Length: 138
Image: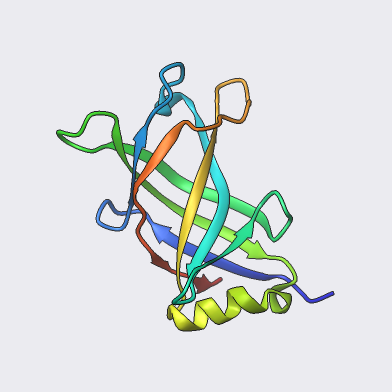
């Protein structure tokens, strides 16, 4: 088993933030808890993914998360935060590592949300503008 490697990503400023359109009419984004769902990286032909639910991303945390209303855009939010996480069995993700090299360590983080009762929300937002950020070793 290969060792895990720790990373961080900074989306803390609005000019770095990804933009989503909140589509859940039952839950307000302000009342939901965000966490990392998966990360993706472009290898030039297609995206390569690592998922939390598959155990490829472990020990993940978001810091200073804020869903900032995008002025003049109905139900559109800038997702501002910093993230720390580890990639489990780092060297075993050959395709992802090739994509990291191709993209010069630029990745996208896709978040998921839970309601106030801790239930995972499905289809609660649409991606509008996913911005890449530099994956930096912790």
